[in-house]
Image (cartoon, rainbow, N blue to C red; front, side):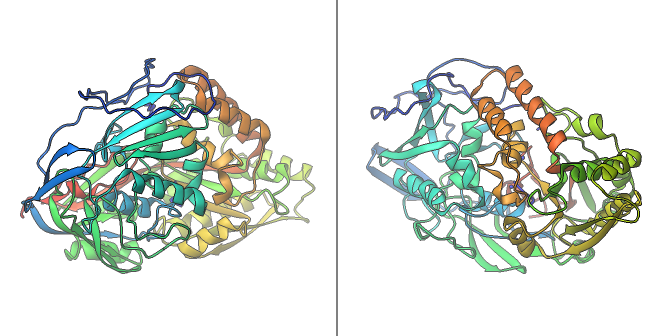
Length: 569
């Protein structure tokens, strides 16, 4: 997701049979009497027809007896919380509190705490486990997936959640066609409620990572209060997650309360408050004054160094596949000239950016696929080197530019979303490009909400963005950027039929080595066409007071709030 929503080397390969891509309506299946367990987090391929999951019984506010799919009796008990209140501070912003259009890191984190999907990631891991669904099976060579829902799931207002809510929510995403809709429309041909507790997905083709897709917000069931055909940016209705939004004032605070009807283990903290800060200086001050218990995205690199020396705080490093890159608009002049894009790629000195701007908290990146993930190749280093001024000058001359006739570029950044270093990053990139003597760079900026809108509309020429993974697979670092059916959110206008074909082929192949070969071909074309220039791969840091525990951030890098608590009560 653009940080605008995915660790290393582990592919989530689902158990499917590669085969026919045709549609099969499928007969109504009966849930198995005995549910067995298979948790998938491996690149080993096993051919089978049925995938089901073991359900571990846990203590929750609601105990359920289900004599039939349409008859559920419940008794609610008051949960015992470890902590009454915990406060998180951030310089990030919320965009649309609506899974049909939200496609940025922090809003996905919020949605993942107020909604649950059919499946979810076990906190702190890349393991996909049951959530609203208790079990599932795969039919018709991987094109039909049938999910059996738990009977005790309710929205935060107490309304029972059924298969019809799952179907309505997913079809709502398909209808609205917001930024993340490609995560559904690219793969799902149809979705049906076979009865109150059975959902059937009919896929356009087998997808080797479909469970990982289901763990993303566009697949989350939303409250029936969400309208079917329009986006509600400030909606507080939520879904069936561990928390619900009790109060919300945009760009100031969000108050989350534990969902009294939550079907699973209750959160450890009753109330989570999220406070929004204008910059890293005020965020750090808020932490030191104990206005907040956790500082999460983003402090300055120097802040992490300082706070690490303070015994009152814990600085937690999160290994990350977070990437930074430049988007190049290929539809406007002069960046519609591939020689210009290649010259920009050659002139960028990633090593300098990592050391000077980020003090070593990031490292150079030469592909959109993160370093350490299978199929990664250093394609931009192989083709252009790093800070290769002579090559950049040669390419610029071929494009018709000189010291007397300079290439004029407008470089955009957003000042707070990626932290306080962003202005410095843009300034250093400007210096590197102008070191050619043949480029003149004008820097412009806009706040995050405006910036996202400008990108969608293709209104910027060259601009900085970042990416957190939607799902842990190389596909998520290539398809959303380079496939013309999915990359409209970038505003770059890039389209290459050969790339589309390679990415489509890689989706249906189960063998990892074969998929890797296709993804390497795609990266080679990325290097040649240069619609995006990868620059950095980073680490993430969370700073907490020493009495805060339960920080369990996994490879998808979204913080589960329901595991957080204070040892001091």
